[in-house]
Length: 181
Image 1 (cartoon, helix red, strand yellow):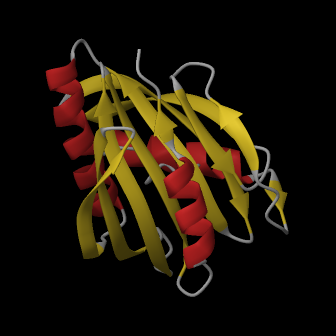
Image 2 (cartoon, rainbow, N blue to C red):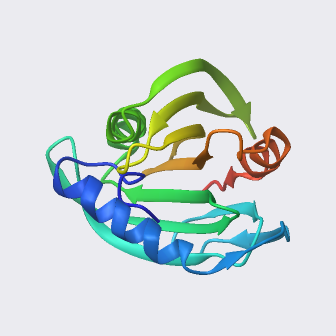
């Protein structure tokens, strides 16, 4: 997963880009949806290809945290879930807000639409934005951010402008369900 999809300061974006690249190595030309259950965080999601998982340390609001990213790439579009564990729910809520800010900042993105959606009683912030890759290519981004228990999550779909299918984004984001602990 490209490290700029991870939260964090200067070292966080670099770590995120490396992780995204690692996860993107297993590409598939077509969408092959499958339900995935995370092994280290309690959630389920539909992935369009077999996902890869990697954990990296990131800096989020000055704190060093282990962030686990599980994702897949299909036709230059990345589908990924990131999660971090914090000491308590209050800190997880703050981390969810910080994850969104870091992702938008790392991509130099402009938010086009933002709303709150509720899934299984859990409010999530959802954004649609446009940004740039580290090489300057224009990107479309669709993401959700949430906190459940002591975990903060980011679910994202990002890819070149015109390649991110609204239907695929919706399928992925709507299938993301953080479980109660």
